[in-house]
Amino acid sequence: SPAAQPATGTLQGIVVKAGTLEALSQATVEIRGDDPRSAPIATTTTEADGRFLFRNLRPGRYGVVVTRPGYVRRAMTATIVAGQEAPGVQVALTATGAIYGRIFGADGAGIGNVEVAALTSRFQNGRRTFSAVQTARSNDRGEYRLFWLPPGRYYIRATHRDAQSEMIGMPARSVGGFQVMGGSTATGTY
Image: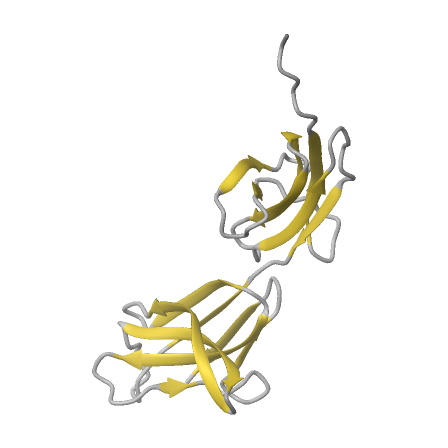
């Protein structure tokens, strides 16, 4: 007698731009085991209408990871029940932002090959610490651009290879600082 096939379920949904109902095509949707570090079990790309569908999933709890260039990665969980179609899931992705500017000297000429970093701060053991989220180098005109940054508050650090010290921008509420909101761009100079 043929072996009985285990009952399976499906997971379907739509990926939209956060704060709107605008469907996002070409988003990558991965199904992973319950451990977020596990390799993807199945992967698909959203259609023009932002929809995705996974069939024949074994019953259990899964991690769902959605990514798209220009948007913040989103992770969530879903439970698949045998013989049932999971209700449609709506995944809202937040647009990222960019910080760009120009590094220049006292004479106004751009300074190239300066490492520029977007930093976040937090307090650890009563002391403020900084972590680099992204780095870039200024071009021959002194211009730099840090992009696909998640919304948040950033400090900017510019370090020239010949410099003795680093320059750190002030928080967003002060002169010289930057705050990135979803889908926005911040500019500044030193």
